[in-house]
Amino acid sequence: MSAPTPARPRSGPTAATAARAPAIHAQELTKRFADVTAVDALSMSVGRGQIYGFLGRNGAGKTTTIRMLVGLVRPTRGRVSIFGTDVAKHRRRVAHDVGVLVETATSYGNLTVFENLELQRRLTRSPREALDRVVALLDLEELVHRRADRLSLGNKQRLGLARAMLARPALLVLDEPVNGLDPVGIVEIRHLLRRLADDEGVTVFLSSHNLGEVAQLVDRIGIIHRGRLVDEIDMSATAAAVHLELVVPDAAAARTVLTSTLPLDGVRDLAADRLEVACGRVAPSAVIRTLVQAGVEVGAACPRDSDLEAHFLRLTGGEP
Image (cartoon, rainbow, N blue to C red; front, side, top):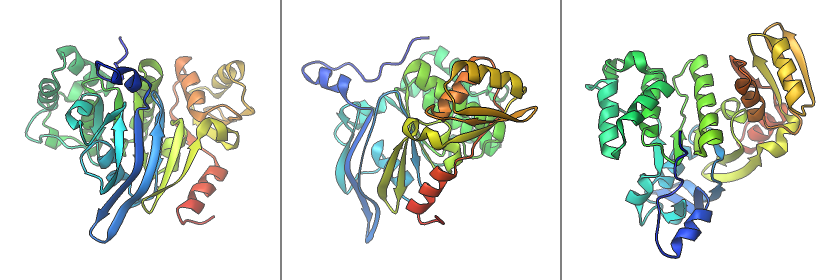
């Protein structure tokens, strides 16, 4: 399986510049609707191959920001580039490199799962193998002949993710990607996104209002409140405060894998199928990735991180 190309080839002196450019670079992004400022002078940079969690309460401006990042909404002020290409000036060129899932996944309800994906495949001029790949990755084999309007909310979300991933984009921009999924589905999507970033170099930008969903997966967190980016957190630098509670088939076996592989602050069994991990300087995503690579199934992973949670609540107007 070959890694996707981060950006389309360009000729001339801009090619070298584009090769060094971050996946996403936003400068002073602002969006006003009449007298309401939905996003206010937001600047950020997302490195290639990162999983970036965009965190905020409902109504904080996450979806409006995402729509500006991918060119679905024109900013009132500011600019954004994807892999060095200005989105406002070259939206069609940028579209080749970006897979997008914004809010609730949409599809053609009168078409089957296969027909929806085949239409997307033809629009993106992707090979037939790409369709088979996303069907397998998103566990849609048993649903390919079912009409999209008869899918559960979680399976509609899987179909939306499959459409976003079909052309093997170098950047995935996902708005609440696990919305409607059951706990097992959430874990599967987390593992899938981590593999895409680690094995194929795909950059993932995902939004959520749930700290627990993203803290164990992402490399970096940006917190938005009332349209402003109020903080960015490097998860590897803050991992010392993070404790993970993991549900696994065999806690003792999982503990052996972790203690023999990672420099953790501590691992203790909570039950035969449950353990607590003090991450130390190890990112929570690395803990989960190590277990998965060792063949240990992670049924659930819940951050027990009162410091990070309290920080988020303080910044977004919750209880300190």
